[in-house]
Image 1 (tube, helix red, strand yellow):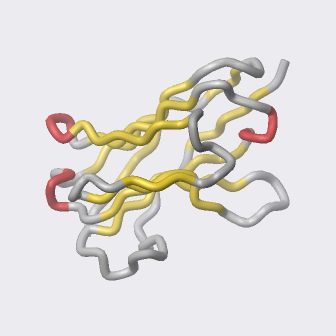
Image 2 (cartoon, rainbow, N blue to C red; image 1 turned 30 degrees about the vertical axis):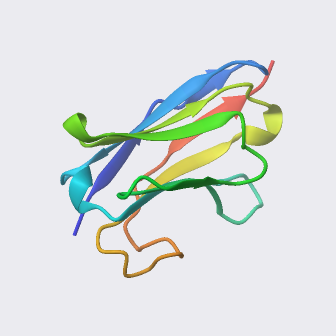
Length: 121
């Protein structure tokens, strides 16, 4: 259906910023829902931010006002701009793509391999 690959993770100090990218194998115009999820050690995977092809977005309460999800349709890439990062944001971040909306509002079965974000001084 669709393949996605994340990039942009790394080590950042508290209060810092990172931008994650998710490259998709098909045009983002043809993907109904894309989202960022994260999983910290010992925790379940949780939704961070989601973007619909019609322009709608939603965010987890814990990241509202700090994270911004956006689509770069020209480059088939989904971004997650993360500002004011805190240690509790440390996790593996995964991109998810639901091409036809079959799974919505749940994530689809199409995940990237993930990228690790570590927030620490």
